[in-house]
Amino acid sequence: MRMQHLRSLDQNQLTPQAHTDSLPADGKLLYSKLANISSLVSSLNAAVEDLETQEITPLGDEFDFYNEVERFEVNLIRSALRVSGGSQVRAARLLKLNPTTLNAKMKALKLLGR
Figure (cartoon, helix red, strand yellow):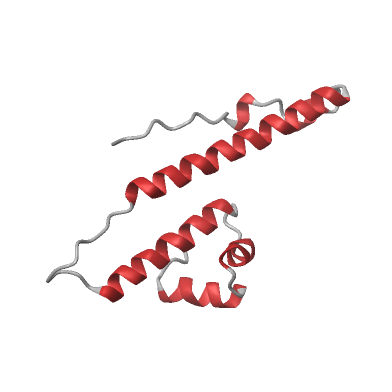
């Protein structure tokens, strides 16, 4: 079953920061809330996409425990990085890991870009 994703506001649809200086306090607060909601919608869409891509390998002759654990670990790390905006330090905090441990796992799983 395919879920309908929420539409997030494109950052270009929001008033640029330079123009918010001339807004009254209520306008600035509204802009800030819209930006937060847009960010939340983007995060929710990413989470839904993660759920849709999860395939459970049936137990049988082809099942490999270590491959499944590695695939799960990769998905967790990618999700944490997405939620943290790409920050390894914040992703490590979300995963309750030391940043050096996360970095070592990313190297071992070949998740670091060049």
